[in-house]
Image 1 (tube, rainbow, N blue to C red):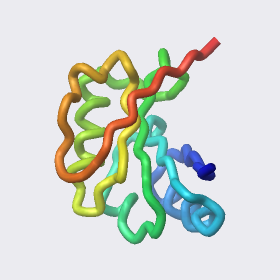
Image 2: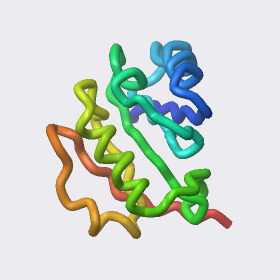
Image 3: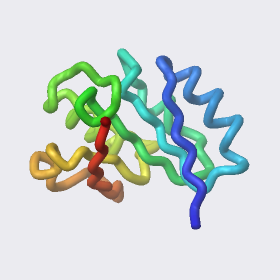
Image 4: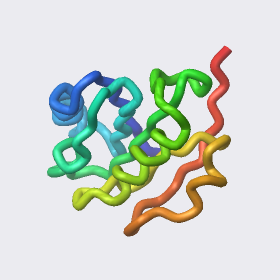
Length: 116
């Protein structure tokens, strides 16, 4: 069993503070970047001692991301391509066929979220 802590903040700085606080108790840290206007993935992901997942769910998937599906895909690719790359990116099942390969060693998690 693994403990995954999901962090949803509006800024990279706030997300880093939250991650620093929970990292000792977590096996994995999920950064939800759907509420952030701008994301510096190098800053967000650098220095993590635990594996990281980056997710960017849109409203339909229960998230807050207001951009286009293409913008979401670009965000997730940026997280995978960063020097301090995410271990995995969480891709909504409706976008999975548009994101066949990822740069580096980043893995893809295909998820289905029901928001009722």
